[in-house]
Length: 157
Image (cartoon, rainbow, N blue to C red; front, side):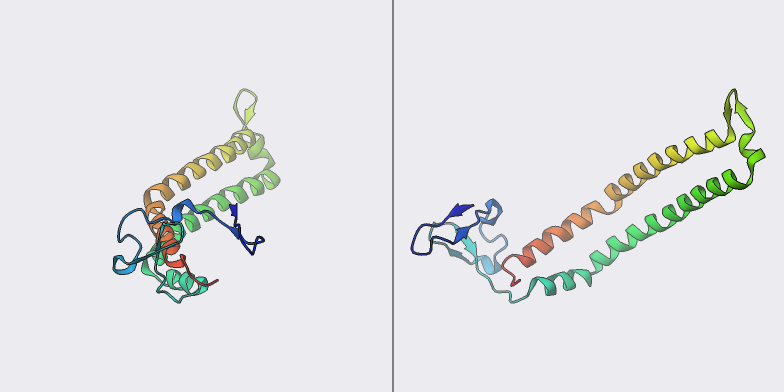
């Protein structure tokens, strides 16, 4: 961020390193661009969309719906299964004292094994979620992010 010199010294200019055009014609309609006073190429703004309109357009896109569908196809069953497993453990611990007190190996009983199983399934579910996101959603979501950033560049706020 630099402070502009001149008659209006209270104006600040944000230096955005991503604002420079990296290649001729990239992110510029028809390869046309305007040149700023400092010699840097700036894309010509031809869009009159507000940021809200851009995000609503992206939300209605098939790619966004696909990302949301893939997310729900994993999260809803996984959350339901984990919630069922957790509630089964709590209900068994409060109602089935004899079952939970049954020894498994040495001083370990069913309650301790099931409690440790809660921790294990938490870590396994976290790993499975991260793997699913990396393999099935991250690439499409990143493409949507870049597309949205390009669409909102120069959009009215």
